[in-house]
Image (cartoon, rainbow, N blue to C red; front, side, top):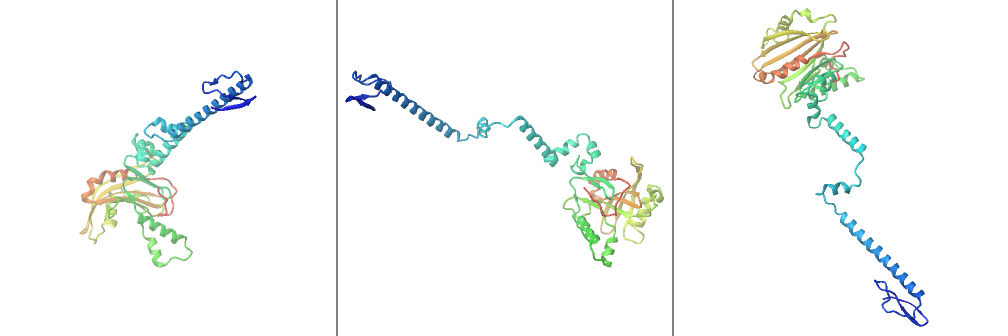
Amino acid sequence: MQTAPALSGQRLYTCNSRCFFKEQRPDVSLRWRGRAHLRCLNEKESSTSQSADQKDAAQSSSKSQLNLQDPVETIAWGGNLPSRRRAITGGLSGLAIILVSNFGGVTGALLSLDGGKLAGALKADALFPVAGYKRCLDTQNGYEFKYPSRWLADQQLYRRYAERIEQRTGLDPPSAARQKRRNVTEPTAAYGPPGSTGEENLSVIVAPIGENFRLQDLGDARGAAQRFLSTTVAPEGSDKQARLLMASERRDENGELYYTCEFTVQSPKFFRHNLSVYAVRNGLLYTLNGQCREERWQALRADMEIAAQSFHILGSRTSIPGWGSRL
């Protein structure tokens, strides 16, 4: 109970929660009764607002404990759901990242749906494996071919490229030994299975030849192959024996002529199976060679034949052999 100021020596009692005087005092004027009633209403409003604040604080405290098992509560925890535009943009961005990075082989699988025709036309298989193969695309030396996507590039070959670039751009004149090393014809590209000894590989050599030389000058495919084996692979007096198994020729859509030959080379130390393709353009001889041990030929035959069939000379403009930029 609270008391109001006394009027003419009388004590005024304010109303309780039911808003009436606990003791009716006829000697108290109506004005003081009204004031007491107003004070009671103010106290009720104050206590009501305090109760509401305490209730809101309790609710916010309960909300601060996130229930991760409730998906609706989990989404609402971060605020409002993202707008439709933001959700679509985020989804498209994620899809683009998946396609560019070939996450889970998705891009390669999509490009393989038509047998790799679109990927071949766009040269996209130089970036993504398609149907189990990638494309070696050498735009400076001007050739391309497919190789098994599980195979790796020869890192030692890249290091030799870096050394040759350093030698070519150096200010000091090259020594005689360095000049001799530079004249040795080396592959411009080489790929092989990871962890292998190098006996199984695909490689390309671009070497200078007569300016007006044509592949037909060697005769037909079989005659050219026999000449190549007897003079280069297994010349007379060496401990190697070469045996020609197959020789054929083909022309691409630009009319470029290619000779293909399959042969074996045997010596006291090794017995290898080879598949080679030859082409000539602008005074340069292009040679793709695939080789493996004889006992491994049946397992690798399909890979070698795909590489040989996909070997093409790109354009009339070529650079110095061995200075190509490959993908």
